Length: 205
Image (cartoon, rainbow, N blue to C red; front, side):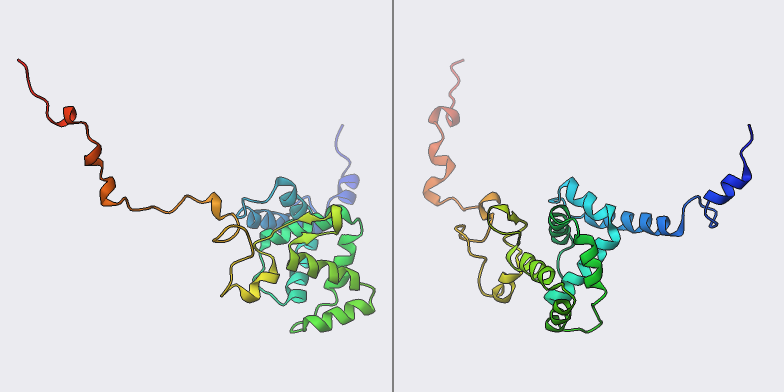
């Protein structure tokens, strides 16, 4: 049985690729996000997949985060972790992010964006996003999720003079690095511990 051209014509997009323009753009954006996140080995597979499966919302969340924190150099990796935590705990998170993103204007101060967000019923969303970036956690109490400690934005203002508070003398996870090399004192020279029989071998032949 031959294919009915009328059916193919009704279902196939007109761009000749077999996919709609929207599907193509989403696919390309998803691939770009996935490739970008490959540079962050600490991300779980779920965190990468969440960002890649909804790349437009993830991109909007990243831009909103830059605007509301006034930090342009925030980590894409940390952004994916925070995004994943919100995305999986709040069903309406994608829709709210899109609404908030629509309120962002070029050169807009964070306090102005916060005020506009409150007027549009998005004040709690802004507060939760700012809290996540500055404390490194998402949620409250026993339901909170730790995203990052060392890279929390609240430590940036004093980063040039103070290490992040920790029991490790040289910063978080310092103990996981290889210890620095130490020079052996002369009194511990290996020659002192060489057995005489190893150096003064007398032939009995």
